[in-house]
Length: 244
Image 1: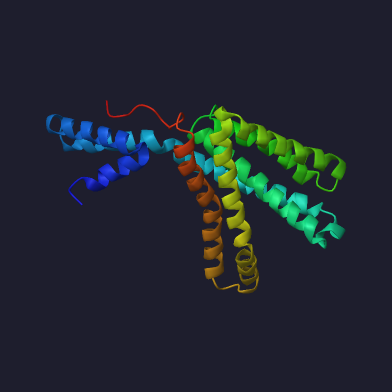
Image 2: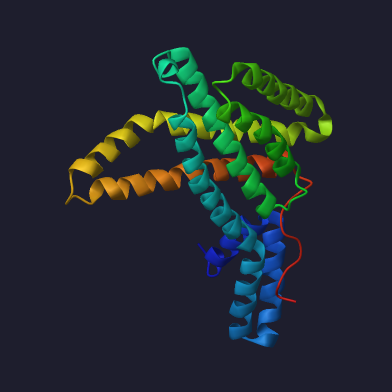
């Protein structure tokens, strides 16, 4: 890779290929007149201006994931014991709960990363509200079933509207992929928790659990960012630059 190629590659990942190349080219053109120190300071300011929303969005999404872990525990404690032995109710509840957590995780990230008026953020919030009602009120079928029908109707309406179709489909795909990942790794997660409790002096299970926690948050956000870039092009991220 040629000299400066790594810096240009990073800027292209942050701003997009065409825009990042243009920004880097402008900085290179101004470098002979302003010096190398200015070049790298301007480069870092530009990179921070392009990526700070992503890092703040990751922090917010992580905080949301932690809080929803407590909500999940509260809901499970109030889940009827008789239903826990019925696989249809148990599986339905687990998947609905997974979708609820992933929707608010993705919506909170999109609201910070792309702005609160972003279509993916608004669609995720609108879908999350009735779905969370289903999770919390799952034993009360007379309330939970209409809320589930409402969530499906809202998703169907989003998919039928051309303005919202890309955002809703991307959101649903990212939530589905992350939910499959979560429950696919759940047996490993449980086994690691067992080892963590019984193997007091072995740090490996704890380290692996932290890695799983990072995957549970990072994978859906990476998928969300990729889908947003492809199917929600009107909200392309932070505008402007910091090197002027």
